[in-house]
Image (cartoon, rainbow, N blue to C red; front, side):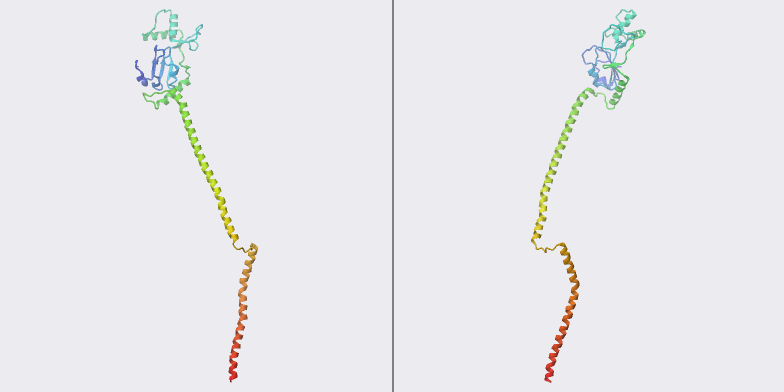
Length: 290
């Protein structure tokens, strides 16, 4: 157990803290420096840890202690901000002393003796009083809520080091700003991507237009060739006429050797006859001379 008025530097070492002061409106301890899983019993009234401070540490169990449940239904008592039939321990002590007939100063001020604390507790049990349910700034804790605190504490202890500062509310406030920043960055990225796509689309459109303009030029070239071909002499033959001409040429080629032979045959006798005539003429003068 450590008792100190300079405890901020020791908060990270504590597994349980009991705070009981009269420092209403003052900051008693820095809950952001408390060890995850720590149990803080706030006995002070007004509380040393108001709801705004408790909200900073969902991994710490803060109990509003000093509350007693009475054995019978209370009548005529105004609301003091507690569940029905539940009163503060200081008021319960007064009731116990009245029931015991002990009209005396029992525990007042800072000098409270431990023996008197145990005595008043036993007297309260005699009259059917007991500690109320474990509650916090938001009312009575359920078993599920306590289990959730334990799980969050276990998770936080995985990375926590003594001296670390944890403030869930600050993270909650910062989260929307971070989310907005991420959203803005994503929007800028999307805009940039859209611009790039738009430029690319323009380039593709320009290329397509250039290709389209070049197409008539390519078509014009065959037209010129056709014109040149038109300017050249034309046989004027149709495909059918061309086929007939080819057939005639083939037939002519086939009949040419026979015609050549006939021509040669006709020419051959004429040659012989001329030779005979020449020989006869030559022979005739000789006969005459003889």
